[in-house]
Length: 176
Image 1 (cartoon, rainbow, N blue to C red):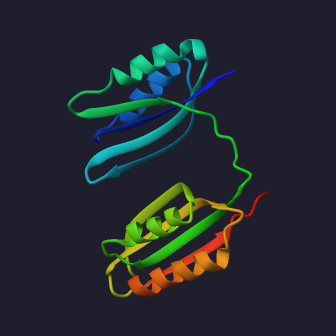
Image 2: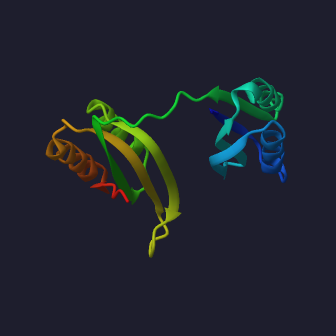
Image 3: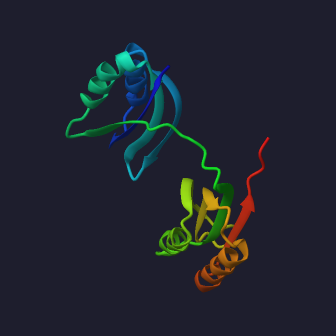
């Protein structure tokens, strides 16, 4: 039996930071399961999911929290499990268009209005081919209530896409 821990870290980007985190996790009996890490605006930002024996949890938590300083912020949270909600179906939302303020706000508001949970979201800015303009892309895994009328959701997303001049695609996630 193990306990899931999620911790976030934000601070100055420097060599050895991931090694420092991995050493603390390993030294305290943790098992690194998954992570998302990136340099964003000159800062290192990461979120890490680990498992640990419940008896070793207090020591691991203290060791991770001890890293917090003026240059580095660490937040540790104990997981609550991850039961799959059978009243929802997992879908993927993809979005691409010229960057402008409000894209995430408009789409997130529409999803929240339908009680859709965003399980994972990744966004990037790249240069558009030919013009070099800033191109915003997003992909999200979402939990859509089974009872929701998908045509109504798609109509609302299409209206947002038209208003913001972006492309939004909604599709089923293939399960293997």
